[in-house]
Each structure stands twice: as C-alpha cells, then as structure tokens.
Image 1 (cartoon, each protein chain N blue to C red):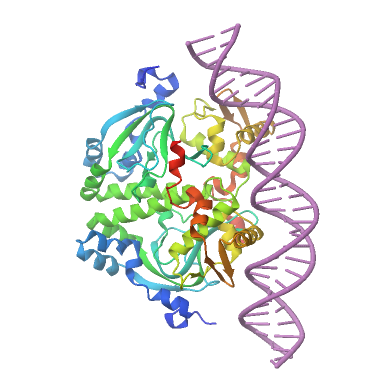
Image 2 (cartoon, rainbow over the protein chains, first blue to last red):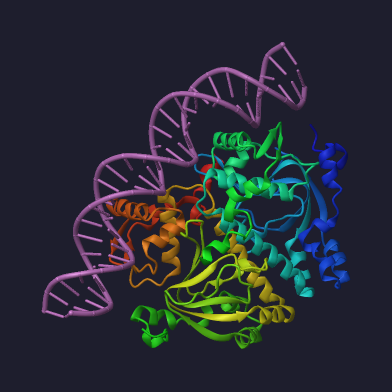
Length: 255
Length: 255
DNA sequence: CGTCACTTTGAGGCTAGTCAACGGCGGTGG
DNA sequence: CCACCGCCGTTGACTAGCCTCAAAGTGACG
C-alpha cells in the first residue's frame, strides 16, 4: 500500500474526523471564548508547516532521543507515543486524538522522551518550534494556552501514575475515550488494539479483555467488533472514581 | 510548639537549605545561562507575595478543589501534594524540594487537583497568579520558563505512570532525591517517612523497607537512621533504567 | 480459503499487598 | 530519672491481583 493518507483514502469514519475544523486545536480552541485577539488564529495558522499524513506502520512522526523540532496538533486519526523497555516491549505513554497537542513533554528538555507513530491513518499539523517561540514573543497568550494544555496533561499523567485496579483504569480509559472520540449514536470505535490499551494502562492484553468482559457481564457496556457501546455511564464513573475528573466524591472527605 | 518556621528554628541541616539563594528558583534559574534580560529577576521578585513558612501537620498550603490562586516556589524543606482515595488513604502525587515549582498542574483547570502540605519545616515563595499573568504579558520568556518546567514535570510523570518493578521505582527515586537534595559528604537525608515514599511510588511501606534492605544486602547503599548513603550509583542507575533519565541503555535497542 | 493479527479463554505462578507482631527512638509526664 | 506512649521501621506468613504461558477462536484481507 502506497503512503497515502489523504482524506479520500480514509474510511467514512475517518473522513468525518478529517472534516473537523481547526477549532479542535487547543491553541485555537479558546478563541471563541476569549473573543478579541482576532488576528491570533491567522498568526498561528500562518506559521504552520505543511500538514503531515501518517499511516500505521509507516515512519514515526519522531523518535525518542531526537532533538525536538516542532509541536504537532492532531487533526484526524490517533497518534501514540511510546518508549521501548529492555525487552523491546512498547510502553505507551499517551494516546493523542484530534484536538490534542503532541510534543509538549519535550519542551523542557533537549531530547524527545518518546517516539510517536500513528495508530490509524492520521493527519497532524506541524508547528515548528522556532515559529512557536517567535509567536510566543509576539503574543504571550499563546504561551498561556500551551501552558494550560501542558498543565492539564500533567494533571492527568499524575493521576494515571497512581495505584489503581485494572477495573478502575479501564473504566476511566473508556470514559475518557468516549469523551474524546466522536461516537456514532452511542457506538464508540476504539482506534487502538487491546494490546496498546494494556500497554498504556499497565495491564496485560488478557486483563484488558477480561475486564471488558466483566463490564459487559454486569451490563455496563456492550462490546462490539472493533468498538463498544457504553450503557451505564454512571456506574463506570463510580468505578473510575478519582481517575475520571468527577469531584462528587470529595464531599465524603469532609466527614 | 508555636507556628514558627523561621530559619532560626530550623535544624542545622535545614538552615543550610534555607540559605540557598534564589538561583534555585526555576523561574530565575536560567538567568545566568541566558545572560541578558537583566531586569527580569527583579520583575519576578517584585511581584512575589510575602514568603510563607509551613510546618508538618499545620494548615495545608492549598487544598484539593480550591481555585488556584498562586504558584509556589519551594525555598527550603519539602512539600508534598496528595489526594485522598475512597478509604481516606493518601496518594502522594509529587514531592517538591528547594527549587521546585508547586502548582503547575493547576494552570490548566479551575481547581487544584491536589492538596499540599509540608513534609518538614519548609519555606515557600508565593507568586500570585494574577501577577504571573501580568508578568507573562510583559515578558514572554517567563511563560517559556514555566512551560519548560511544566513540560519536564509532565515527562517525569509520564515515566512514573509506566509499569515498573518495586526495585526500579525505588532506585529511580533514590537517585532523583540524591540529585535534588543537598548531601552532606555522601550522606543523604530523606525528609519523608517510608510510608510517604511508598504512597508516592505505589508501594506498601513494607515493600519500601524490604527493597531498601535488598539494596543494602547487595552493597548498593548503606541505610542509616533517617537517611542513607549511595555506594554503587552506577548499579542503581542500571536498575532504574529508563526511569532515571540516562540514555546509555538505548544503544541496546539498535541491535 | 489460507494467512495473519487480534481476541478470547484457561491454568498456573509471581510480585507486591495485607495482616500481625515486634523493636527502636523520641517525646511527654509523673 | 524512668515509665509510658505513639510513630516509624522491620520482619515473617499468608493472600490476591495480575502476569505469563499456552492454545483455540474470530475477523479482515489478499
């Protein structure tokens, strides 16, 4: 198969994603909220390098140890970042879906802390760091947005670093994905295989599978080929607990 | 004992820490490197609220769920951030030692994702967010520094989120602490009890203790009352692997 | 219709957690 | 000055959750 990830080559599903407008981009996203700063979007868009298409199995977007040269805004598809352990196994650090910024964890050091490849046919916008720096100097609000996004990533990474059971992790992961991925009337299609989910959540693929089955047996969801349907979102939230950003539980702590 | 954490009340050890100059502060830190921007340090220092003294067991620096109002630069001592799980157990998200910035993971959301208390008698500089924002508008390089620091925190949090053994975690933690804490000719004094270390590394306190003993039995370190001495730093690095930012191992991956 | 990657299921083992008990140290009060 | 108490660290025995290994089932695709 030739290297072809143009929108035409996408499935219907991905075509829908590709059509998502640039408001998805966290850098541009809050424009509407902030009103003003009308020239900002144009300034950001104007410094982007040409968009890049990525297919799974193709060349990585970047590789661990490289010098960081750009930030990447996911426009369609799904990107994963990972490192390899001593046995050559992937340790997936994060999945990035349309609207996410890839590369924020490299801004502090001189080296990429991970490699990045596409999980499915994907498109990313490339923002060269030199341009980003220049734009920051002109428009400090860009820095604030990047900072806010990095901060959110940090908060969720710190959460994932905690000690939670397989069910808690899976529940939180599914809820998160259903928030971030477009669902076609309730049917959620997970772009990554269970092996990747496990590698991200620190679970064996067998455990991922078994946990899904358990959830299904309890009627929390219906698993389908290459996807699933969440039935009892509330109960999943209860299982995920703190891992899913809901704060109702905190009232208990006062007691 | 009254609320008194003035330098005079500190032990010799903490007094030494308190004397650390403001170059520790990551916001000011790279001044020397960057040369130029001479007015920057003064601008930063000028907008700081009065320094705060904290004692363990006293009122938290901030509490989970609060609206973020400031960033905090640790000047002396040790601060930990944590949340409580359903059973009321602490889950320690991070330790902050002199030179660290606390609160970066709150910049993206409207709520503090954790509470913060002192582990030992500590002092922090308070940088009100309103002032920070104002200063960012004037001096974009501040945003870049905060971004770099947040990015580093993110990279290390993503690392800690991975699947590693008790020994790997402990080795990485000890190496990190020996980098960040002042050591008196090789003698490293850990400010936090083993229970806290375990809560941070997702290990039972018994496991922390056993792992330390194992390291000692192998001659990697000598554990002392309230501290330890690292003997074979190289071997500890080998155990920590990717968790400690050393990249030598990567050569193996090429094969 | 065969291949291949992914998913599913079962059996067994290991890491680290839990539970329980003890020793040491520092503070506190008689 | 010493007995007491509480926190912390230490050690052992047992347990549980999850991983490993193995093998069969399923779907996508050439």
